[in-house]
Length: 217
Image (tube, rainbow, N blue to C red):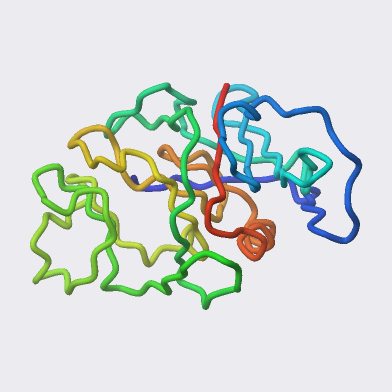
């Protein structure tokens, strides 16, 4: 989905690993994430705004790694089930499958793809590769590359860094695609979650396979 810009408070700080934080009560998502040990919590606070908290599970229970990070979500808020064009962020618990960006790999445990002008997220509902990343020259792509089709070229400022959320993994046409946790440049999104790029880089360096993102109102 084409991203709109996002503005975040510059005071947002992710306190990743300088010292082990105190044990916290079980967070709201605790019964919904199975054996996961890393969870990014996103809770709507009204409109297109949300609060992000980052948790790690240890022998002492869930520990907050970062708290109160300002985030923006879809321009029209959240929905339990999203559809193409709604401008809403999906609610639920989703995998974090791999990372990408126009910038070099900042490090971390997830696979990273550095993208350029030939990288696309296929939004063409008639395409067999709908809701996947594809690499092709624009005039040779086997899917519709127009913005009207929902396809995105991934070489845009908001994708300096991004992590793919596992939404609509069955790739049901019309149920939405291109849901990412990505960098921001000043406003609400078309359905993604977006935060300050420096904070996102710190989170990406911390992430490991099996991490989840949990989103709720």
